Image 1 (tube, rainbow, N blue to C red):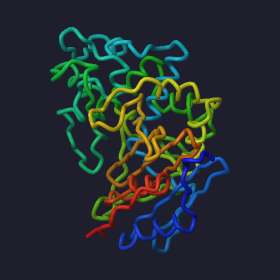
Image 2 (cartoon, one colour):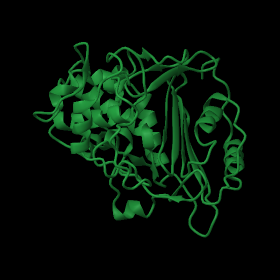
Image 3 (cartoon, helix red, strand yellow):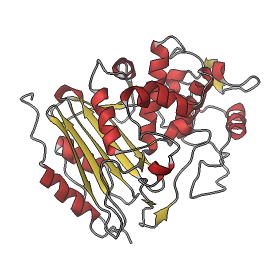
Length: 349
């Protein structure tokens, strides 16, 4: 272990942190996968009640951790010569559809993957027919209608603005480029080669039995989220065991995703916060010791997720929660891997 690497908390210490966070949150559980060179620990706590407790095979919605998978699909397709990072997104739209441009500058696949497109966080024509599942009725026709009339507020490629729309669009375009669908791309290029059999979009009956019930910020049951068109933004579901496989592969340059990881993290762009940079999908920052970190957080109506990778020490963590109550997973992940302080938990009311 490098001399600068601090000691990680013990399993008992992690358990105590999880139990403190869960106090007063009936129905919430937390699962942590902590990776280091010596092996992987999976620690689960909750939920309280009559049902089975969570474990490494409990399935959670990943939310925006999906974006990292979408970016790695893009990187894999680039490395195989199937698309280019600088291809205009327009090239992969259906005939007659158009992308917005500004001052003659087209939005590229790279712009979408780095949140540099100029597109907003969400389109203005989401019907919200089911507010509890907000993406469920956003179809292809609505997406193409929005793109055809939207006026970009700035030139693509200039500045960072986080966009769920942009990443959902990226997944849609990659599927069209491959003459496939997003779920198939995920299985063929990432989860299949890595053996991540519980990392899917549509659950089998057996997986459905292991799918955690989500809860909103007030700890009321929340509906699952579905993404018929914008799957690349947040549709993936997974387990701590599968995410441990993924993070181990992300730190291994010889793994099935090793080349795509190198491309995804090679040339980051400033995010404007003075601290972090945007790779393809990944956020890239520094640890207190100055070491490079790769990370992302995610959330849906009933779930929160966080993952951090420290390649130099070959250590990583993922934290999965079945509730949107705050504080949630980011501070837990930073505390476990980096020794950052925990936020004071507020009981949901």
